[in-house]
Amino acid sequence: MIRATVKDGRLDVDVPADWPDGTEVEVHPCERGTQGDADAMSAEEIAQVLSAMDQMEPLEMTDAERAACEAEREARNRREKSQFAERAQGLRSAWE
Image (tube, rainbow, N blue to C red; front, side, top):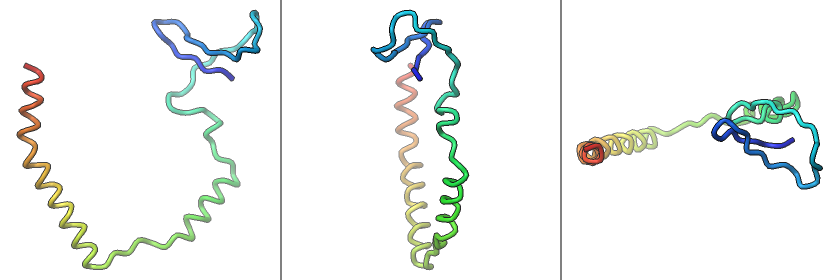
């Protein structure tokens, strides 16, 4: 298999050095970000993943952990809101 990229309506192709001139190839578009069937899991792999997931214990937080998590989330929201005007002004000046 070879990979190619479309640039200005043409294919930019890297081929193995041992392919002689005149070698006939087929070119098909790939889905962006996947390798088609190469990414697909076999039935055995799916079974292994499901088995591993079944063995995982659920995440349980104590009341103190839950409160600390919520406090951190609220603090992050306050911090982001306080910085919003400054960031918005920076974006405005970039567009002017």
